[in-house]
Image 1 (cartoon, rainbow, N blue to C red):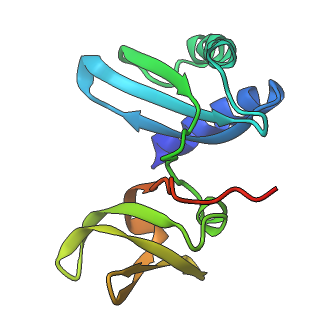
Image 2: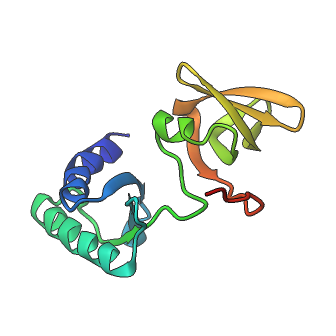
Length: 156
């Protein structure tokens, strides 16, 4: 978690300074094939040129600060429709939506939960899977994504 916090502290100001929302990051240490993925967002959406601009600036900061000592690949992208969820505020924005959650360790015999996010209670997510409600501590989440709903009707 210390590496995540260090990377966030370095990268978030770069992203926000360029006028984008820092959505989150993933760091996967895999020896010579490590990956740093930075998610950016904007109310008007994100395009490839914007990702390249952020990538260039983040690379410059990473080269100077050198927080990752081994080789790694930097990816910058939009969170997309199946956006990863990192913070309680992000989860709160999607109450009533379907989410796919994977825990670091089993809870009640399982690590994967796919269901409707019904509430946030303190630092826990309330997810309804079939007819069962689960209260999952946010700090136990390894990865969580929104499940896109293509059946929604747009109203203007």
